[in-house]
Image 1 (cartoon, rainbow, N blue to C red):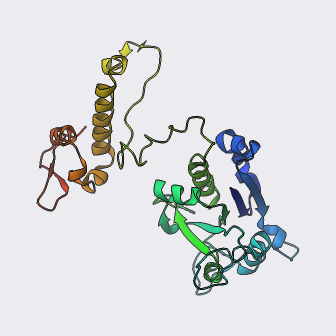
Image 2 (tube, rainbow, N blue to C red):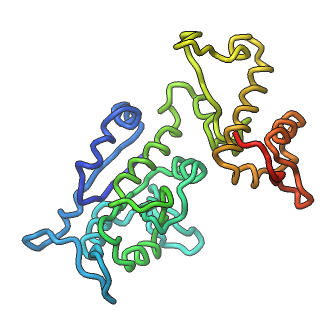
Image 3 (cartoon, rainbow, N blue to C red):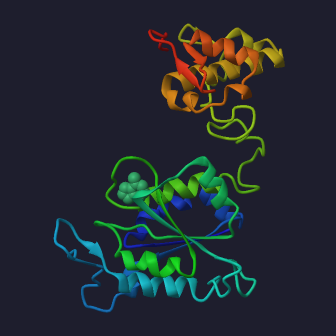
Length: 284
Ligand code: ADE
């Protein structure tokens, strides 16, 4: 997979040389190219921002450097030439997805990470200031797939940290990046046996630490009971930390033991086919 990042702080992306992503690069699984947006400015001060039309606080990133940078990085690749193949590659080459980090974007989820991990080429455009002149997003949306994405309901000083977050979430899903192919099967938010639930607690050796022991079931060797215990812990943690996920769960997809555990936690399936909490339910 190829990843391009266009930024005014290339050094902010140094962590992409480290750990999982760094190793994936060394092993040739990821081709990461970080570009300095100021290379596409032409004034003495390498200006990338200007005051907003309509007034207001802050500055807005000028369209010209972004346009030149994106044209240089993407070239003619993958531009739509045919209305029948939206965002497809006209020349059979890879079609890039342009990912624009912004707090006003669509929430970045595990599902979005999996979708992006299946694409051959991502181009990230982390902005500073109040964001990028809207015409840039509109212009590239005419020819490419552009996704405006938020990593959470809070405002950061720029999109570089969100790029690090997204690249790590995407890279670990690429074939061959994680040592054990099963490693993300039980991730919180992953498909599979824990679909839609948060992952419960984990333990390793020693069996006793500061007087605290490991739950007996985990050393019982009884795979069925271990799986049941893990699922109950996932239900408990999800109920405590993310009740919204239980509210959106489908009761028909739960087994009898799930329903019992949820009932202990105060959740019952209502006439609308969704779980609701009984008043005065026990909190974790
Ligand atoms: N830039 C600033 N805040 C952001 C956020 N929450 N998500 C993505 N990009 C951002």
